[in-house]
Image (cartoon, rainbow, N blue to C red):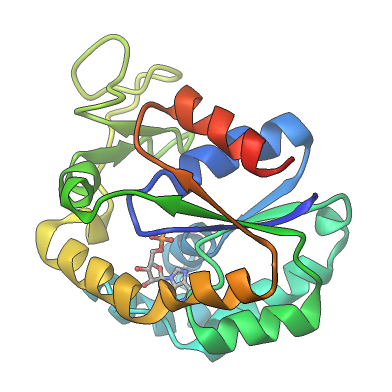
Length: 210
Ligand code: AMP
């Protein structure tokens, strides 16, 4: 069980769990959102193409996403396995992925929509080391808004502001949630309850990989 997809709405905790699991099992962790944000920061042509969609909370076109991820999935870093976080997000992406590599398991993070807006708008990260926090549920240990690791002031993602968050949730239910059925039909889906703190959810992720 080493080629994994984490599926779920924005704010469900996929990124946190993918980070924990990939460190523990020495898997590559590919987050298309992170790769896109790095491309935007580097002002590459791909980043410039993606930026407008991302800041509105809309999906970046499938062709751009496949250019970003295909090489990485075939590359040596993915050889011992990987966790895909935020990809695939559309039916054409799922079909393209199936042609690139076989997927062993898809973990669907289930969480009531009502808590997600709060979870997303309270989310912060360290711009230096990338550690994720939530001011409500997982704040920095020393309080305030400074990173535990390096004391850097935490920042909010552009698209975690309320207008973009609403679009992202709408987009998820319209375009990505149907992939749950796609993977159920292929016999690789396990659903987990994604509410609770990170260690509680991590235990459920482990159970879903057995
Ligand atoms: P995330 O960090 O996964 O929430 O992704 C942030 C944003 O990047 C999304 O709102 C989309 O605009 C874009 N994005 C990330 N992954 C994908 C994908 N697989 N397909 C299309 N757009 C994506």
